[in-house]
Image (cartoon, rainbow, N blue to C red; front, side, top):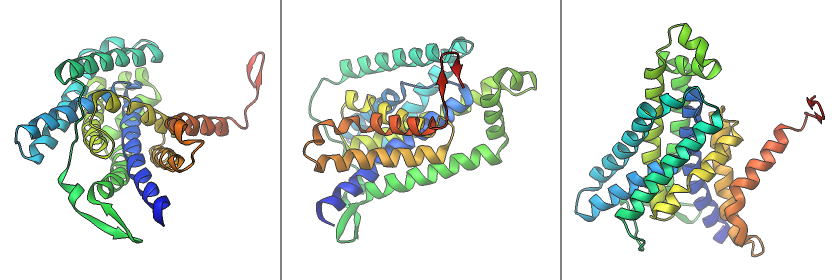
Length: 290
C-alpha cells in the first residue's frame, strides 16, 4: 500500500481522537445543552501536567492518572461552579462562556510552560503489529479501538441505565424533566465528569500522535466540534463516522500537492458538506423555512 497506506492508518488514528472528543462533546451537549468549547484546553491541561510528571521521573501510569484526573476536575469545576448560573441563558451565551474558560486555561498553560519543542512518548509507541506490510504502533491501534468501544459504551449507558435515561430526558425538555423529579444537578455532574474523563484520555493520545503543545491541543476542539456536527449533536455513531472521516481526509490531503496547504480546513469542509446534505429536502422562503 506504500505511502497511501501509511497516511490512511495515521488518518484513522487521529480521526479516532477526533471522534472520541466529539463523543465527549455530544454526551455533554445532550445532557446539559452546553457546547463545551473548552474541551480541547481541558485535555491539553491534563496532557501537559502528565508530561511534566513524567519528566520528573514518575511512571507513565501516574501520568495517565494525572491527565485524566486533571481534565475531570476542570470539567467538574466548570460544570458545578459556573454552568448552573448560565443554565437559563441562550445556547450561544453558554458556549461563549466555555470559550472564556478555554482562554483562561490556555493562558495559565502558556505562563507555566514557555514555548519550546516537547514530545510525549508512550510505552505503546514501542509495540505494534504488521498489517498489510505496514507497522502499526500500539498507540494508533489503541486510539482506534478506544473510539469504537467508548462510543458503544456511551450509547449503551444512555440506553440501558437510569442515569442515561435521565440524561435523555434532560435533552428532550429540561424544565419538564425537573418538574418530573429528575435530579438535574446530579445528572449534569455525571455528564461533565464523563466528558472530562474522555477529554483527558483524548488529550494524552493527541499529544502523542500529533504534537505536545498547549495551543495545538486546545484547538483539538475544532475537529471535535465538526465531528459532533456531523452527528447533529445527537448521534454517537454518526459522530464516530464523522471523526474518522475528517481524520482520513485531513491525512490523505497531504499527498495531494495543491490541496496539502489547506488540509487543516478538512473539518470545516466535511461538516459543511454534511450540513448541506442534511438540508437537501428543505426549502427556505422569505417567511422562513417551508
